[in-house]
Image (tube, rainbow, N blue to C red; front, top):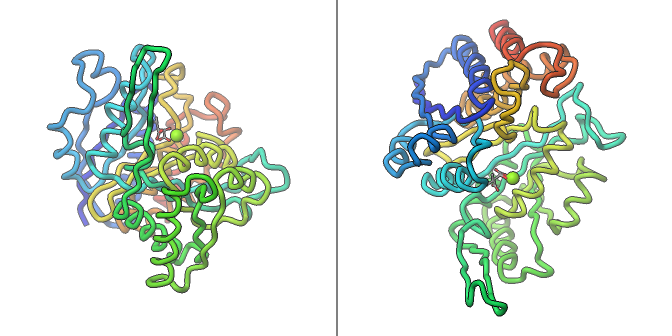
Length: 353
Ligand code: IPM
Ligand code: MG
């Protein structure tokens, strides 16, 4: 196979961690016998400051033509918060219709979790977050803005199509050989009765009709936060809406050992996907060779899994686990080795397969 991959390394330490991810991609390609072509795009804070452009419409169709996109980090200390998040990250999700946000929460052996008495066998689940609707749909407005009678509304948009395609992806994911056949819907059926009634009905109708072998479960979002800490072993695959998914995956990243290892994918299945380390651009560490690239390497692994290169993805995960065993810490500046040395170790592991 030959893959066409767009690279948006972005700001701060983004380019450094992406370089390590691409180093591992090169090793994986050589071993697994696939080839690829990389195309760089310089969207991010620096370009915005230079040109005023975030993600121009002309770039959307170009990005969409690639099999996948590797994203480093977007965020610049000199750009007002919100501009790059909305103008690049959210714009890409919406314009490319990346309707799944896939976030594995997996505690690798050797990684410290803040959850007492829990280990890798307890913390291993995947969150499927709807990525184009809900409260992120930007529907709402003001009435009497700026007056003391001001009213603002922010509407959660849930379409049957959007909910159903997300649920089907999650059911399919729970059916994978490397999962355990359990899907938990995380919502708020007791209060948000319109949105979650739609989700609830679709969840059960699709499950009954097409996935009779998948065990269905339901948890309220607030209780889910409690279970993440108390009984994370209850979860296999979780499916939820955009806002709840945003919130619970930050908690998930913490129980899996922090931003140094957390990766995610924004996916339009069968069309394209954008894979990223979940952490930010960490500007204060830029250019020092101290940032942890494992999340970016994990994002490349997720991309290969998405592209169907399952064996290569597995090798990368093994390589990450092997490398963690050789690092002093996962924290920037305390790893006992440089950013590039971490990438070298994972690449070397993959090359040895
Ligand atoms: C995330 C982030 C984004 C989101 C922000 C940066 C817009 O928190 O990817 O989880 O809210 O989705
Ligand atoms: Mg978030």
